[in-house]
Amino acid sequence: TTSWFIGTPRQDEITGYFDDVSYLPGDSAALSVDSHGDPFSYTVYRMGYYDGLGGRKVTSGSVAANPLQPDPTVGDDYFGGAKLLTTGWNSSAVISLGTGWVSGYYLVKLHDTVNGGESYASFTLRSATP
Image 1 (cartoon, rainbow, N blue to C red):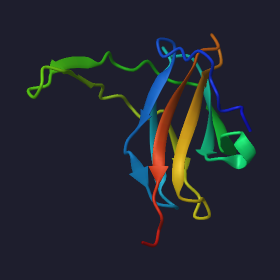
Image 2: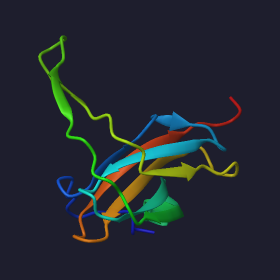
Image 3: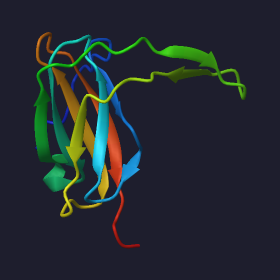
Image 4: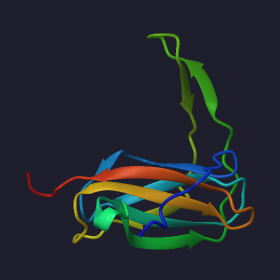
C-alpha cells in the first residue's frame, strides 16, 4: 500500500518516538506522542518493495485520551556544538510486536484525529535468530 506516505508531515501538530530503536518479535514497544492533548491514531507499516508500493500495513490503533507532554529540554552537545533535545515524555501507547512479524524497518504513521496533522515514528525489528 502507499497509505504510509505523508505528503507534508506536520511535526508541530503531532510527533512521537519509541522507547528503543530496535526490538525482537514478541516485544512490546512503548510509543510516546505529543499531540497537544488531542486523540490520535497510528498505523504500523513494514517498509519494503511490495510491488513498488513501498510498504505493507501490519497493524493500527488509536488513543482516545493523550495527556499533554512536558516541553522538551534543549541542551548543548559537548562534541561539535550541536543541540541535544531531551523530552522525558510519558508513554502514550504500547504496541505488541507479534512473534510472526518479519524483521525489517517499520514506519509508524501518526495521525492527530482533531486537526489532521501527521508525522512518523519508526523502529527496526531484529531477527530472533542470528
